[in-house]
Amino acid sequence: ALFSAGALPDEAVRRYMARFAADSACGLDVRDFSKKLPNRGGAEPPAWVRSCPPILVVGAEQDAVVDVQAVEETAVFYGAKRVLLRGLGHDVMLVPGWEGAADVIGEWLADLPGSSAADQGQQKGSKRLSR
Image (cartoon, rainbow, N blue to C red):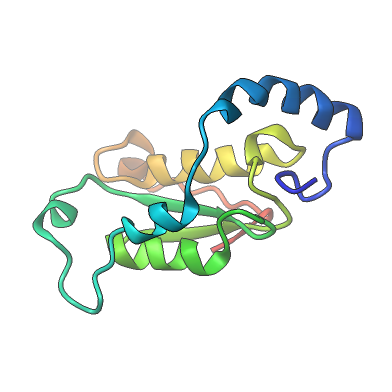
């Protein structure tokens, strides 16, 4: 339930956890990882950030791994749009409601300059999202 915000039945959680077991053979030192995260410290973004392609930062409201503050800080660092998916946890793609995340990405891609949807001025709204 930690990663799914309680949205998955126990049997599904057990099935997914069995699949994830192989990934767990390698640990992640979160303290060390956090020290290496980029931090602008109020300064201008580095040149490589300014040359990045368009970026969308998507977070999940009930994510127990990456909190809302981290999502917001990431968006600020990159100067990117931030979208927060309501009612979802960390493993968005595994739980009911994943379609909302797919819609967010699809709508964002469609709105990028040069996309056919953006050129035609089409926009779709989704009630599952907080922008």
